[in-house]
Each structure stands twice: as structure tokens, then as C-alpha cells.
Length: 167
Image (cartoon, rainbow, N blue to C red; front, side, top):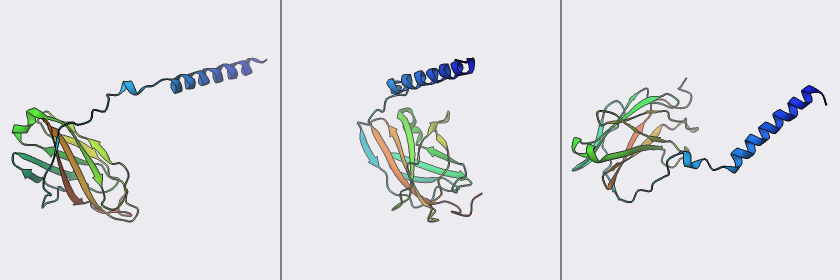
């Protein structure tokens, strides 16, 4: 057996050993477990505004959500999302997320976990996929846990441009 054959066999054995190790071990413990929400889901009324370019508020006192999408809000371009809650809710506010959907169209999973900022707002950088039919009507489905409640709201909006109008 030549030296290059021995190196090839040794390298192959190491790769196979690593693959077997990975396949036999459960690495799910390295991420936090999914914790189901056990409180009350409180849907807020639909807004009469669009969150694009300025805050759009929905409220059912004392609950209130203000969502703003800013920047170049169109497919395949990163834009900013900011979610605000009333100051009184901030001490109990927990995890917040947003799902982007198109009514009647399967656009895949477009869920973003929002990051809480020092000022109490939640933010994320968003990139929407392109709809193959050229549609640009979206719904941002927001949910935030506040104490024992999950506040939810649907914010419909239209993204700028569409298929063929992005770079």
C-alpha cells in the first residue's frame, strides 16, 4: 500500500467517524426548548392604516400595538420593522414575533422573532420573498406576549414593486 492510499483511507475513516457521531447524537438540547403559550390569546381589531412609512396603531384599551415598516419595503430588499407597546405594558412584555403571509397564496414560512431594544421597542430586519404571480399584498401577523396574554394583530400592507421591479 502506498502512502497516498493510506492517507486516503485514513481521511475517509475520519469523515465516516464524524458522520456516524453526528447521526447518533441529538443536538436539540443545544437550543432552548419550545415553550407552548398557556395564557389567553387576545386578538386586536384590524387597523384602518398601513404600517409602511409610518406607525399604524391598533388598540383595544388598555392593549395597543404600533407597527412601522420603514426603508425600501419591497421583495428581496431588507427593510426595518419596529413594534411599540404602551409604556404600562413594557414591564410584563416578553417574546414578540411577526409572520408575513399572503391571503390565498402559500409563500412559505416567513416568521421573524423581534429583538427587544433598550427603549422597550421591538425591532427586526425583514426580507420578503417574491411572489411568482407578481402580487405584493401582504399581512404582517404580529404577536407579543404581555403577562398572561398574547396580543395579536393583523396589519395588511402593500409592498413597493413586485416581480421584475427589484434588483
